[in-house]
Amino acid sequence: SDLGPTGIDYPNATYIADAENLYLEPNGFSPNGIAVDLPFYQASANFGPSVAAGQNDLTLATVAGYYLGLFSAEHPLTLFCYSQGAVVCNNDEPILIKDGIPSDAIKIVEIGDTSSSQTGWDGAPGPVDGFLDNTAAPGSLTALGLDALGWGNLVGDTTPTNDYDTLVYTIYGDMWADVTAPLCVLCHDAYLGLTPAEISSAIPVIDGLTTYFDIPALSTSALDNALLAAAGEIGRAHV
Image (cartoon, rainbow, N blue to C red; front, side, top):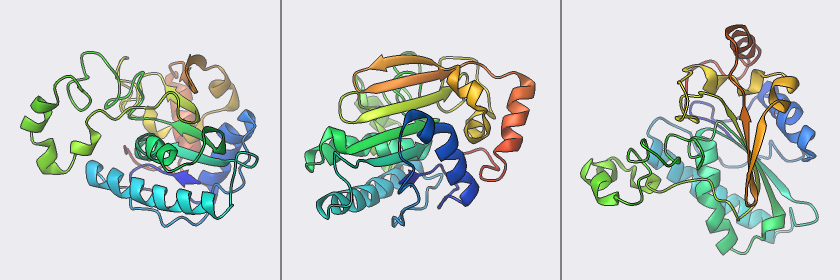
């Protein structure tokens, strides 16, 4: 199943092929089911409500699929989650666990995870933590009007470490997924245009059931090539 970024309501054939060839098959995940016809939400720039709607859709479809026997620990469901879609997946993991779907029944691959607990703009600890993810001071966030905007559900969101096997790929400097490095404005659109060699050069960091793969900084020419290669499914900046 695919949960895409803002602006892509449903993945086209190129998107699906790139996801399979670059991120699923190299990790031994079956691509079967990536394009199942889920009643998916329109990922919009109204981030909070859009994420909430996505979580609701993901919960309904996944819980129904599990109890109807469409996937199991022996034949797990693979979720491919990009950007805002990764936030949906991350926030929904504890809900799916609570709903009785065991840890070995779902595999997750994320790219451009904006709620990454390591580097994401609304998930990472550190000096930027106070913007959306400062769990130590939620009152100050409420004072900023996030609840009024419908974004209060993003406070404290992060990538879980012990719910499901999860692989998270982050390009160094990705302006939405890596706030710990000099910002690369266009890197967020480059994931589906990277070469296998660029992806395999990523440095893994293991945190429980979650493994983060930090893709080294792209040269200007490498970024240009990746953006051109990804143009079939990604044509604009998004979260």
